[in-house]
Length: 252
Image (cartoon, rainbow, N blue to C red):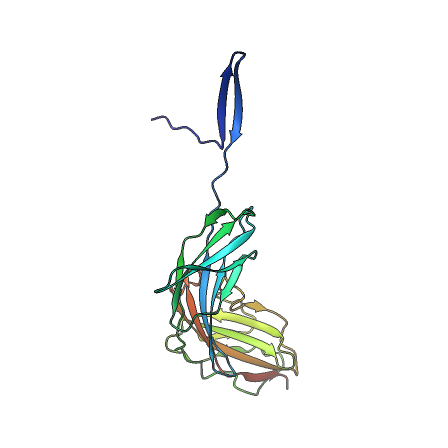
């Protein structure tokens, strides 16, 4: 069988009394696939202990798209457009713990023509069940020797797949270090073993300024329960619950 290459052009032959002419008519390229990324987040507020539930959606920019419609399907209800926006992200905070929904996004042209539609993705919000970590070291109001680089540690918690560590300055809450790990300890400044690449703002992992002598710092660690496995790229929902804040300083 002879295989021929497919070109994005169509040759049109027109014949008349003066002979035949050849014109090439352009064929529109296939639409770019619209891939929807989705993550359900349950976060328990450290001060109020109230759980907040959000579903984060993100998708790529599509050429010639003027608008994106997010379509949501809840169990027992017909699918409906929830928002129409020019941005390529949206946060849904209308669901409750344990509730699931299916989402898809369609890109529209300036003439309201549908350019492409994503596949539907479903997510179920976790109800908050994971416990906050205990046994934190350095413990509250610890004073470390000058030049010490602390190793933060805590007890392993049932149902927690990951732990999220955050260190801030007490006087202005400036972030100086954050990391996510599956172990129960991490040394200040070490590169984070894990991160949510598709939604880096949910649990940001970064190293900022170093520890300052004589300055009080606060640190906390959160238990993170997941669905979709322990691979961050496959996680569809997380439940985050933080420990109490612990204070420490280096050199008094």
